[in-house]
Length: 184
Image (cartoon, rainbow, N blue to C red; front, side, top):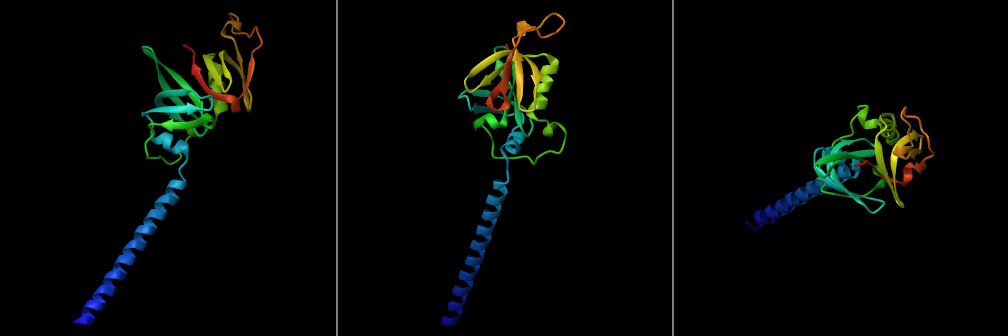
């Protein structure tokens, strides 16, 4: 009978060790999976959710996640009784509040691959009056030109009736931009 208890105890210890090893393996696999998740993947999973993004200029942007690309996120923010769109480059994001733990695999469609320059060229084409916030301040006007790493903003009043630029603007490197919002 003593031998039976000894073998039963040894068998229980082996089962516990095997169960612990399986649990450790699962935990390591989960950590490895989480290590491969990018911020934009979590932002994509938060589509439609209200979040707060703190940017490198110290400002916070609160809004609903409307669209996410690899280099930027579009938030719809409350502006009085209406809403306004705010584009935040992912490189300007310092913290995100309200983001869930879920993530969505990177999409392979064209919209997800649009660069920050693509988004800015769209604003230039539509001649939208915007507020461009940077680390040191902001400027309001229309996006006139978009280069590979910068954009030019000219005052809204600097555009003639035919849409021709009549004044010099401000050149802003993409690396300095914290957000670009529809001007209210």
